[in-house]
Amino acid sequence: MLSLTRPTSKIARAARALATLSLGAAVALAGTVSSFAQGVPIVRDAEIEALVRDYARPIFKAAGLSNAGIQIVLVNDSSFNAFVAGRRLFINTGALLQAETPNEIIGVIAHECGHLAGGHQQKLRDQLERSKTMAIVASLLGMGALAAGAATNSRGLAGAGMGIATGGGELAQRTLLTYQRGEEVTADRSAITYLNATGQSGKGMLKTFERFQNALSLSGAQVDPYRISHPMPQERIANLQTLVHQSPYFDKTDSPALQQRHDMMRVKIAAFTQGQAATSRLLRKNPDQLAVQYGDAISTYLNGNPGTALTKADALVKKQPKNPYFQELRGDILMKANKPAEAAGAYAKAASLDSARSGLLPVSYGQALMAVGTPDSLKKAVTQISSGLERDRENTAGYRYLAQAYGELGQISKADLATAEGYYYGGAYKDAKIFAMRAQKGMKPGEPGWVRAQDIINYGTSGKKN
Image (cartoon, rainbow, N blue to C red):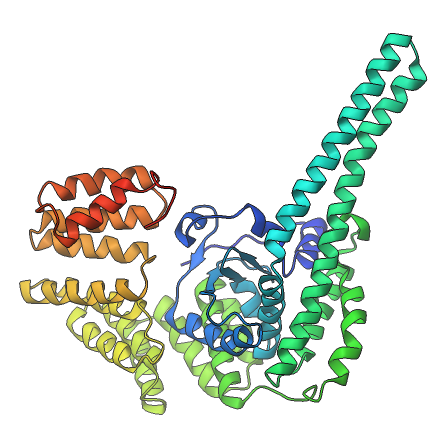
């Protein structure tokens, strides 16, 4: 269902090992998750999002970020990486899949919170400006020396001018990289502080850096430690080892319930992104039988007979009747089996059991109701999808389903407004304005829909997002 880019060379593997917990990419990013997704594939899944938020919640509190509106976004990429951009924390599915324990991912989140709490993004922007200025000054000095060399017919002076220009750029680059490495060290230390404050071990961080060190060694690549933005993995281990071992929580492990949720997340990611063979390998290594059954049921749903998959999903529900994601799986299987009315019942149950109140589950419920196709089910679909979008306004796919439901009910202006919303949150502002203007033609001026359409039309004129 999802595609991944895998490294094809030693250099790619080395780069992947060194690019972990990246801050540098964050500086250039802006806008909504959806506009970011135009270049990077974003993964949406109610179960995985709820679990990662549970990992992050105590860390956010310890870092003083509970009220900062930090959003966690899952990136469909097989490399072990995470980074921050604005008030968003991006985590690759590769990190979630490779991490064997919750503690490893919690350490990643703690590190990124070190960047967020330390204001490293803005500081890095300032440093970039300083480095840019340094390079420009060096370039101007070099040009001046070149001009003087030409005027005096002095080859030596001209050569010195070229050296000043080139050396200035090199100095600026090295200064910036040194600064970035310093920020990474600070974020690593902040992470240990947050882990201690929440009574958790830093052992997962050490394991993560050991993984990177092993990957770097296996790549065989020669890396200049002064030309990278992160300290070498071995250096990071050395910096943290004493702090981690001194913690009273060093030997503390994740609870069995949390580990089980983590294992189920891993088999789910493997099934959807890596195929049957990779899923089978992961299942053979997993000691948790419920996770094994879950992965097998998902794999059967994706690649096997819907009837067999449903039997396996029912067995899961019998073991954990209050697990909303087992009901969600039942809904997915029933939709594949072309039984939308039964699927709607499963999704409704999933949404009612979901303590995290994900906006994704009501949208799935609405899709099943749309497939039922009766006027009454279409009206219910509009209600459910709208409810989901109220909780998750950047779900661009949800607006497409909402527009379709309104269209089938003959409410064309509302369908146009839903389409405009989808384009708006997807970053296609020109198209959003076109559909917003179309929507207004069938609405009374001043009514809520007309006002919202006007907000979309006016977007960009005040420099603010509505």
